[in-house]
Amino acid sequence: MEYLRRTLLKSAVLSLSAGLAAVVRAQPASGSGPIRLALIEGLSGPFANAGEAVWRNIVWAVERVNARGGVRLPGGARLLQVDRYDSKGQNEEALSALRSAIDDGARFVLQGNSSATASVLLEAINKHNEREPDRRVLFLNYAAVDPALTNERCSFWHFRFDAHADMRMAALMEVIREDRALRSVYLIGQDYSFGQSVLKEARRQLAEQRPEVKIAGEELHPMGRVKDFAPYAVKIKASGAQAVITGNWGNDLTLLIKAAREIGYEGRFYTFYGNALGAPAAIGDAGVGRVVAVADWLPNVPGAQSEAFYQAFHKRFPKPADDYVHLRMQLMIEALAQSIEKAGAVDAVAVARRLETATVTLAGQTGSMRALDHQFQQPLAVGLMDRLGRPGVRFDVEGSGYGFKVIRQIPAGQAEMASSCRMQRP
Image (cartoon, rainbow, N blue to C red; front, top):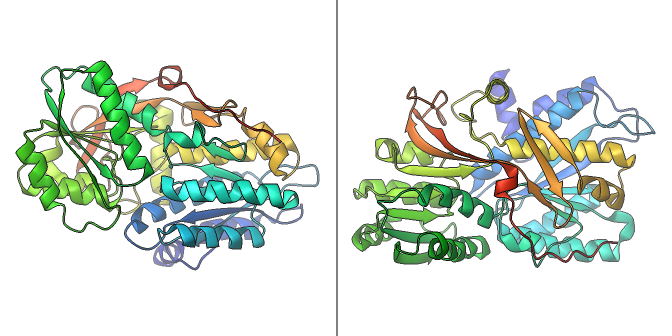
């Protein structure tokens, strides 16, 4: 049964996991059918591992809502149903998936593993909602962190549940500011809107907080197309940089770190996503005390509720393969369920008005949506890679023997940043 369940879960043709389907069968909704959520993500191609990690998290969150009877509405309780649409990591495919999802009845679109894709989806959703008010949809973004999406490009129809790139960079700077031995850094990122914004913000915040730190080199590389990062690693080492700052994610991060290890680079990596998806295993012992990662939450965040949450995920998805749990994605689904119930209907405008002031708590962490720009406000954590069993590292990553010790916890109020959003509301 376990083999069958895991096989079904990872099949690209399924619209539901085996566990979720079982919940639907066991608890039929008394309303007018399930509330459909569309996950549009790269489930094949170079970033398929990141897409599948998201799928597991969303399935688990939906299962939890359905296990308690679904979403309570005046006409009767309704279950949530999440359908998966493979964008193949391509914007045109994502737009095609959006059209299919809307035609299939989805009114809530979930995406995040590319700010470039989020940008084109947001533009398409804005136009669709204007043209077809009877079929409006909301866009729930769990990982696309280009700051523009909740600043100059903010939209009533878009809600971001991850800290944006500038917020994440500010969290890393909390650590960089105290590393007084640091004298030079190398900036490297993926050549698209998010990667560009990370490098831009790194320059700005370094100039403001550590003006004596030299930028030894700066480089953007094609996203998802570099198979051999050795030439980049050689340049980093030759520059003399003591540390690397990067927003790379997925294979673009794993391969970069692996290449740096293989040529003997010994500097620190200040990362947005160095805490999972193969990166700790790729760098091995060379990363101990050197790889820093920022996240909304880390498995070794202290507290009984946090620990129970992490262990519950692994009861559902056993280690080592299924190890990338995102607390923010769980909070996102909880906020959506809460907002639908408070709205009393599955109507985009009514749900959006509730969602933009939602506050949710799970596993000891509380987050609130900011109505100004629809940017979720939550604590952030910064972790330092270390060996399993060392102080502060009770849990490792993907069975690698390495985990992240929490070295900074930043309250939501401190992580919050100003917004230039001038939102137009219906």
